[in-house]
Amino acid sequence: MLKKIGSYDAKTKLPEILRRVEAGESFTITNRGKAIADLIPSSTKTQQRTLLAIESILKIKKITVNDKQLAELKEQGRK
Image (cartoon, helix red, strand yellow):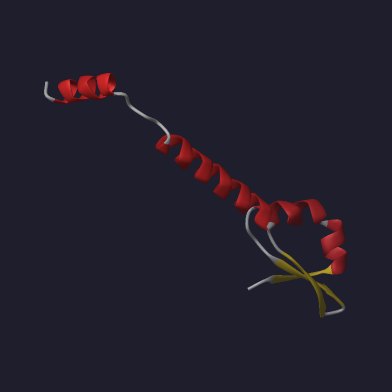
């Protein structure tokens, strides 16, 4: 559920409200009790985190081991 905040409070407390939105909260800005706009966290940040996670996973998958390294790893596992 979105928290309601009057347009005057939204104007005077904008930096604080933006920090709270960045932290995940959402607000409905009202004018004389009438809902005017919704202020919600941007999906861009989430998309950037998702892309970074995918890149990391793909980098891990691309690690290859040659035959010599594989033989060494097998030998270490037997000790």
